[in-house]
Image (cartoon, rainbow, N blue to C red; front, side, top):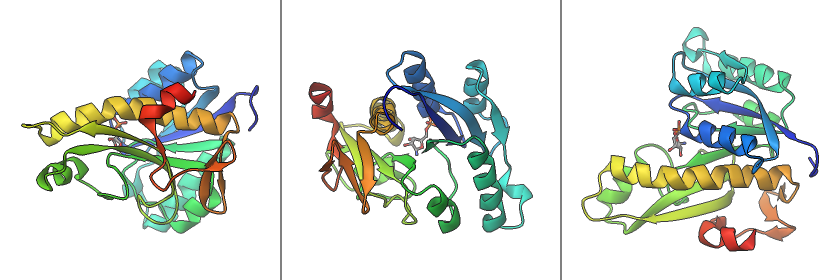
Length: 223
Ligand code: GRF
């Protein structure tokens, strides 16, 4: 997708959708030159669906429990996602492990955000794990999705301090503020044609990104 034309995004959620809200806000303010053409959730009744409906975005619920297995759920999910003809698929708190068939169908066009400084703490309970380890900093990473869970190549990473007395909840809130900045920014780079996955390595303006992605602290000044 080149600059000028608005890209088509599909967002997959399972929960509160605060990252989805950041995308909705960024598209409305034109910080993100894209339209969210569909939001799919594997859970009914979640706040993220309400956020999408309030913004006039078509929503669908695809309950994974109604499928015999992961493969059949993912096959149907892939069909539904593809029906929107997205330029980019955004995983925003989508709490399902995706099959290689799904990932490969959208390879290079699918991103996730993970609440840790990857490669540290893939998987769940990232905030508590960082606190328990005595880490002094934590953060979030946007990455391209590969078949390696939370292991795809990093695009951008934001750090926050871990403060004395932090709980998983206070740390998560501090990190979410950063998530809402870096995720739409990564998508905008992609939509502008500045960001591409080349031979498995994310390139920004034709330069390979470092293993931990673009460090967000300098992203503001480089824009
Ligand atoms: C975020 O912490 C994100 O990093 C993780 O799931 C959470 C989703 O939060 N993948 P929300 O639904 O966007 O509020």
